[in-house]
Image (cartoon, rainbow, N blue to C red; front, side, top):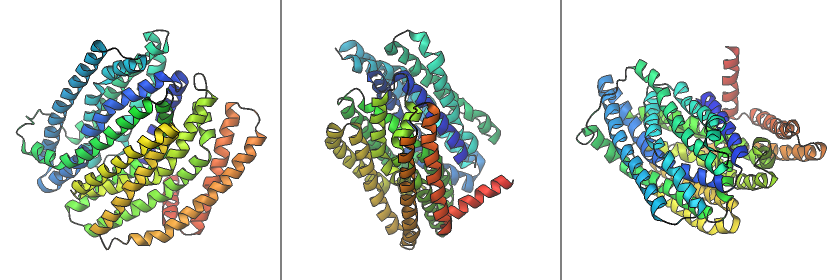
Length: 508
């Protein structure tokens, strides 16, 4: 899962590099990224988030208790309901955008945003269906191939910059419509990529009237609290970006590039682990094996802290060299590098808390207790909106990063307290000693990385890409080696387990 996600994230980073050089971080880039967030809102609301978290446990429950036929019937009913809901959303978005474009006098930025959103609206349907298909395959024990679906999507989006965009005209304002069309083709590719493996598993799509099917009614009852939480999260993103969109041409785009960089380590380990753990925890909960449930959850959090803490420290120290290496060039200049690096340094401290929230929330979803996770999510998102209201006007893209980091810590604090109340014997306090050792090792590695980076900054006077790569990878490699040596010497379980696993893979 991590390997497939790594490939997807690397291609996603390549896509952002191509986007950065093609669009820079000006008005067109901000309008494009903001417009893409609208269909993403409904994708996460209808295709991922609460629906996937409710669907996978029900899917597994039917498989365990009633067999494959009942399991596939649940899948068909869910897909039928999803197609109906997404189609209504797509039509609504297109009609709303058309009415605003034709009926109001708007600024160039807002007009471009609405036209791009209207063009990308059908993406909602394609990617929501793809997300449920991926959930079905995950529940059947397939992780590598479904995770590669995002790889095909990234390949298509990269190709759209070179093949589609130039066909829409000479001006960037016109060419960006080619990227929007590429989003639609990419969503279709991701959906179709899942179909052959699902077919081999025995799935055959059959339309089921979603209005009267008991599975759909049960699913709606389970997801409503989660939908409130996911909707609050996505609406929060749209509102905070609306605040940022009004604060300058560069704010939304700069923060978007920082977010993509943070998602690389988060996706490789945090999202991969959370995706793997949901069906595992759901299966243990369905069989009422709560001892194994607690052990798996505790071990997963330990691994995640070990992997993502060093990613946090190294990214914090090397933010500007990383942004310069990956993005700088053509329309993305030195000023854009400084803006994106500052946003990254304010956002990356929340990496560990973001990832732990994903795991803890999935634990409650696996237990069927979505109301509590929903209430905590809504509370933390209200905090995020308050933080954003005060911080973005004062600190621009850095304020966006700070607001997200602070709200993730609030969310983690409440979920941590809730899981301890749910399982008083979970022994979370036993994680304190290893976590402190991991934290100390990361700080020492960070100091060593900063010293080597500072020395290289004076030694490497040439700014070509080879020098930039040396400035990133040499300190990064030395810092990572320092971290692994300290944690291995300190007998940190996660370090030894991961190194042993890698050794086994290499031996094979």
